Structure formats: structure tokens, C-alpha cells
Amino acid sequence: MLVMACVCTAVFAQQPQAPAPGQPAPAPPIAGGQVAPSSPGRSTNLGADPNGNPLRLALKTGHVSNYDEAKVGAYTLPDPLKMSDGKPVSDAKAWAKRRAEIMNLYETQIYGRTPANTPKVSWQVAETDPKARDGAAVRKKVVGTVGTNPDAQKITVMVTTPANATKAVPVILLVNFGGGPPPPPGTTTRGPGFNPHGDPPVAAEILARGWGYATVGYGDIQPDRANTAGEAVMAMVGTKSVSPDEWGTIGVWSWGVSRIIDYLETDRAVDAKRVALFGHSRLGKTVLWASAKDERIAATFSSCSGEMGAALARRDWGETVDDMAQNFPWQFAPALQQWAGRWNDMPVDAHMLIALSAPRPVFITGGTTDQWADPVGMFKAAVAAGPVYRLLGKNDLGTTELPALDTPLTKGDLGYHYHTGGHTATPADWKAFLEFLGKYFV
Image 1 (cartoon, rainbow, N blue to C red):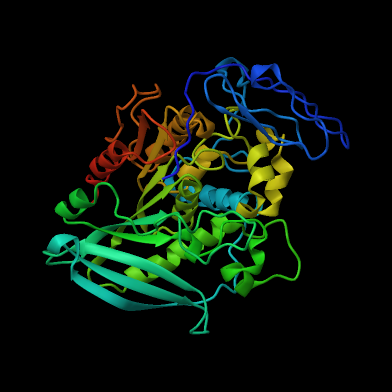
Image 2 (cartoon, rainbow, N blue to C red):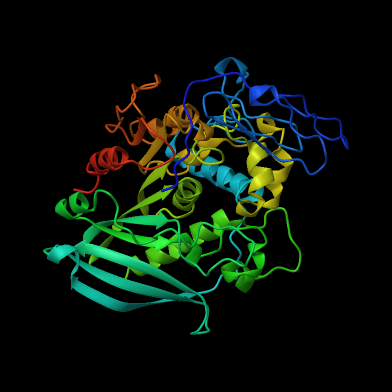
């Protein structure tokens, strides 16, 4: 897992006003009293504040990362329980209509629509190890061929189940970094260098509970880099012209998750009605969107997903919409660009993304030294999703007060853990998630 070295103490970071149209952004102060270069090609990385929190410049708006609660500013969240025409949502039937509205907003404004002509994925068990993990497990290598060309793109999934299982078992599907072809020279990716099929840190406990786990490298589904539209699934779908609701890579990765669940529904060793989903960082965003799109997903663990994931976009802390639009445009629909500098005008926010999984359980984590991902903002989003869960007869977090560090909230249908540490899914996160999940996978 990628770890960012930063400290949680909140400090002042200046936030310049947005420049006039057509004018360059002002050169803001940075740590140490220096000034960012003012030339058009200036760096967006301003180093870190005195506490180690990353400072980034958004060129379009001139915004600089903030870590001071006094500078967060006032905001009003859109109401997930109010229809677009202002009518209140008072029961499950009305929520189904409101949910469709919110889904449409995310498809048209944030992640993009799934094209109608996505390729078929054909699955085959390539290898089986009946004595994996010193005889404690059976491990299968399953390969999906994307499209009709047998030599085309492959998605590899490793499925590990208890060796002593006498019936189909629940499975946790981990969407991991890694996988995919090597990147072209001069490009960066999270593919090679990451082990997409490493066991989770609680693998022994998962198996001891009578559950299994599966792993996939997200690069097998779609590369994670700019100009990826000419590669993999995006290339197979193609497009004559880019529309505002064209899907980004988060949409493609989410689509790939659903194709893996298609396979799991055919695996007699797997109870496909009890498949949980795990993703970290940008893949924490991915699993939230995948759960919203695919109601076969029984539970979701979104680790350190941050901006455009579980963190409130309207809350000015750490990474912002401006940063995402500037630095990772390929992950989102082109329409996201219009919301840079206009966070309060967005028709959705993170609490609504979380609520799209209701009434199914969602577990969210963040770290003290990962303030870039705004762990407090993720907690606040989970709180704000609570009314939807309550409407559907489920339990919210059980509190509106940020819990003490390293004290997981696992009793409700929404869960949260604020761990001591950085941008990673810690063993303590995993143990808390298993406790949370144990209420459902019995």
C-alpha cells in the first residue's frame, strides 16, 4: 500500500481568490516563505506545510490546500431525502425514485455513463491449487478474456476459499493496485511494482471465519493514466466524439468489478449473494461507485478514499475537486471540469454517494497522517448519509461526534474507523471491518 508521510495537526494554508477569466492564477505563498513560480508552466506541487501535509496549487482557480478548520468555510449539503422538485422523500418507494435521480447526477456529472456496447468477458479457471496456504485453502486462478478475440485483454482473478468448506462461502473481493501491461516509456502508472494478488493482512482470520477472498489488479481492467481512452476496454468501446458524460477509468474499473461478480455467481465454492468489496484510495472511490451501480454487492469497505470518494467535496480540506479535475481528469467524466471552483453548486456530495449503497452496509476508514484525504470529512459524510439508512429501517453510525482515534464504529449499518497512521488500510482497519462484516456474513 502507498503511504503518505504527513501529520494531522491542522495549520493555516492561504487560499487565494480565483483569478479573473483568462488571467493566470496568483502565485501563492508556500512553506518557508517562498513563492510559487508565476510562469504558465509552474509546478502545482508546493511541497508541504510545517506539519508535513501536502500543499498543492490548482492552476485554474488558484486554490491552495487548506488544513485549518477555521478556513473550511460554511457549506450546505444537498438533501438526499428531497426530490429535485422539492418534494420530501418519506418512504422506501419514494427513495427508489430519488435514488434514480442521484444515480443520474453521478453518471452525467461525476463518473460518466457505462456505454451500451461494453464487451463481453468470458471466464475460465486456468489453475487450481488445492493445498494453498499450507493446506488451509483452495486457490483458483481465473482468467477473463475481454471481447471476442482469444488473444485480447485478460483479467486475472485469484479466488481463495477455505479447504474445509462444505458449502458455498462468502467472499471479500479486493480491487488492488497492480496488474495490466507495462506503461509506455515516460508515463507513470500504479501497475507494475504492486502485487495485485497479495493476501490481505487478515487472510488467516478470513479463512478461519469460513469465508474466502478474491483479488484482482485494477490495471487488468483499464490502465490508470492520461490518454488511456485508446487502451483496453475504453478502446474496445470507442467513441466518435467525447461527450460530457463519457465514462472515466473509475467507471471502467467499476464495470470490471461487476464482470468479476458475474463469474463469482457461477463458482459453486462462492456464495455470490454475500460478496463484499474492498478498495483503497482511488480504488476506495471505485468500490463506492461499483456498489452504487451493482446491488449484488453485499457490503463495501472504502479505505482512505478521500476527495470524490467518501470525503465531503464542499468541505475545503486537503485534496479538492479542483485538484481532482486538474490532476486526474481521466478518472472522471469530462463534466467534472465544470465544478472546479464551484463545489457548493454541485448537485451531489459524498454523503449521497455513500447513501446509494443503502440499505447495504458501508465501512469507511481514514488515517491521522493522511489529512490530504480528509478523514474527518469522510466521517461527516457518513453521518450525513445516516438519514437514508434510517428511512430504510437500518442503523446509522450511532453518533454525530467524531470517535476517539483507533476506536472503530462497527455496530451500525454504516461503519467508520479513524486509525493512527497514514494512507493505508491498516491491520486494525481490516480487523474492524471483519467485525463489522460479521454481523451479515453469519
